[in-house]
Image 1 (tube, helix red, strand yellow):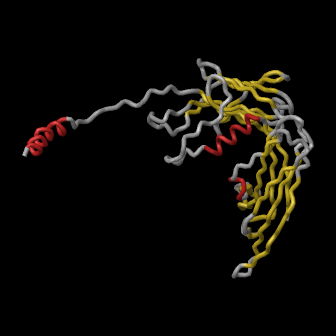
Image 2 (cartoon, one colour):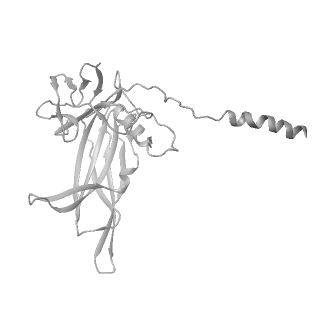
Image 3 (cartoon, one colour):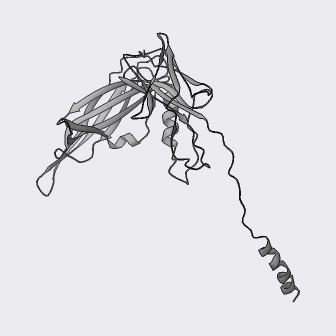
Amino acid sequence: MKRSLLFLLILPLIFACERDATIPPPQTDKKLVLSALLSPDEEITYVYLGWTAPIFLPNSQNEQIISNGEVTITGPGGSFTLKYNSENNRYFFRKSDFQILPGTSYTVRAKPPGGKEVFGTTLIPERTENNFQVSILDSNKMVNYDGKEYYSYLFKASMVNNDLKNAYYQTYGYYLYLNGIDGSGKPDSSFYDLQQNYELSIFSGEGKQGKSFSKTFPSGSIFEGNGNSNVYMFLLFKGNEEFKNFQESLYNYDGENPFAEPTRLFKNVEGGLGVVSGYLKEKQILIK
């Protein structure tokens, strides 16, 4: 009886405490984001400048691009102010505008109208003879029920680290797909990833001068017709430490998974977020 009476006395208090509450989201200041990957092997270099999108604010998933900022690159040859491309929302410069040289440091500076400046500095790797080669380890021919032939290959991309300094290497493989004819009557084609591109594989050359590095790329079953071609492209990237750190943090980032562990992306931009890094690129084309 005493327990029942005590429960009846507490019950009104429980319901009396129930009311709507407005909890303000945490206050977060937006920050500038600067991203630039510099290479002497690219005809056009693009640079991103924008604001962070705090997760607790409305429309936080939308990019907050700064289209009227000031972005410059500085090196031994002087400085150049980048132009803005409204088609891809990036600042850019061409190789004919400003030359990137191997073994040289460059600084990218950026600021919004009336805002504070952010900047990042990077050293482009030295160019060395890497003996970059692509070979076929295995091949299989299959015939479909309708008589069409399918092929699968196992490619091997290999190189030798001849850099006396610490360098990082990464390889990618692609196959050419013929999309058809574009509006101007010219062939329209695109390169698509081979399967192994989705695996992070960065080779460190630290203390491994003269050592070889290789990676295999299974092509899968590809029908050589109806758009598929027999053209394959393989790229070798030689990056600095900023390049390696950013690639690793980007690979570990899983922003679409609500149950994933939070990952902090690598940054070397002073006064903001983002990365300025450098790399060299070599290309091999294989026609089967």
